[in-house]
Length: 395
Image (cartoon, rainbow, N blue to C red):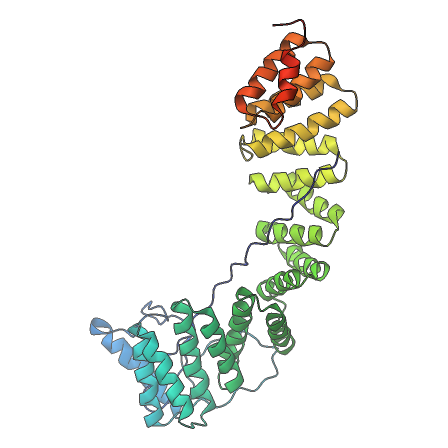
């Protein structure tokens, strides 16, 4: 007997949207801050005040130096060193800097509606400062994401990228954030186009974009392509359980159950399977491949390790093995597994099947006991149990 297999829905890839908030505008120019300052302040927090004022003034002087053409001390190493894009100059007038300060202050005060209004008004003012437009759109995108409005965040990240004013780190992180949001919004064709552009321009082969693209391809019914990308990620980190299970799901979606089983069996031998769902996925894979001995081994291992708990699902899985044993003429094993199924079951179907096998073996007294238990737990066809109880012999 082959068990029907229901594909589990893919878990959304957990890829955090990185905040790229720049530091406060000073001296008519902006220095984009993408790392924690020496005092340990996170970049998503408000600028330091009070005891940290001296440190803040020092940071401002560095920003002013950057505005005059000096090298900003906060510059980060290139995250995308293979990108051919030449970032534009990062300058702003004092008037523009004041507007940017007001917008960032609104963000830090969590006045997100004010952020959107001020950014939209600034964009409508006709400014041609690509850097400043990109920067402010980015602030609005992060505000929208913080507010839980993914569609608005995606719109602002797209404007960030289209304005084309940030350095390469900021530009491509915004592009990647856009792809994440498009995926989360089920705009998978757009997400794929954004990812393809991101990967082509950055020449990045990092596991995060590869995994996201694989996930998007799976959502577009291009499971085989997605699984191949997950394989690339696994080649670098074979013990990544999340990637492994995503790869298995896509191989199953593509109909390549042998490959899915091979991946899972390799993980089992390494002790990487820890959840009941993982053991059961391999169990079902072996059932579908008519490898019942291996299926039994996997199921019993999952139960012995406590990963698979007693449940109606476990009862059904035990019953599948019992049916196979009975079809092969292995009556003792069939009775054993129907008995296990009955202990795990919340209804009486397993007990009724056990009663039928015992009846067929002329063990009428035991069959009647199982039939009574089946009726007590509840069965779809109580007549079958009552017919056994009406048989002569036994008690």
